[in-house]
Image (tube, rainbow, N blue to C red; front, side, top):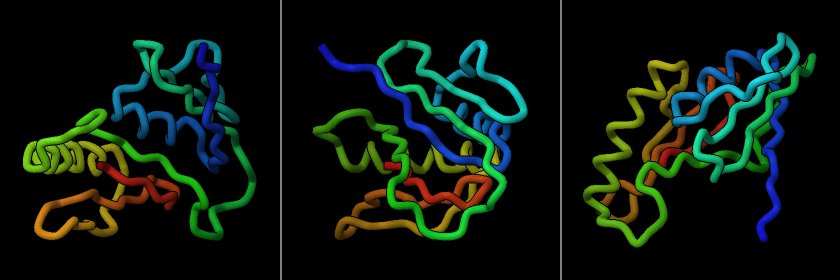
Length: 126
C-alpha cells in the first residue's frame, strides 16, 4: 500500500501560490486556507497534496527540486499530441501568474517548457 504524502513548499504569499497551482486541476484543501498557509489537493485523491507555508525570506537560489505538470499523463506518448497539450496548458498557467523561461526540445520535438511561478520558482510543463 502506498503512503500518502504532501509536497511542502516555502512561500512568501501562500494563498497566491495555491491559486496558481490550482490551474493544474487541484483544488484548495478544506481547513488549510489562511494567510500563513494554504494547501491544494487532487480532487480524485490520486496525487499528493501540495502545501504552502509562509516564510519571511524571498527566493534566493535555484530550486533543488521542482514540480513538473505532466499534461499528457503517464507514457508512452504520441509526442506530437503531447506537444499540443503542452502548448495548450502554458497560456493557462501564464494567465494564472506564471512566466515562460524557455522551451526544451528533444531533437525536433517539443520536450517541455520551463516556467517560473509567481515567486520565481522553476517548474516544467511536460
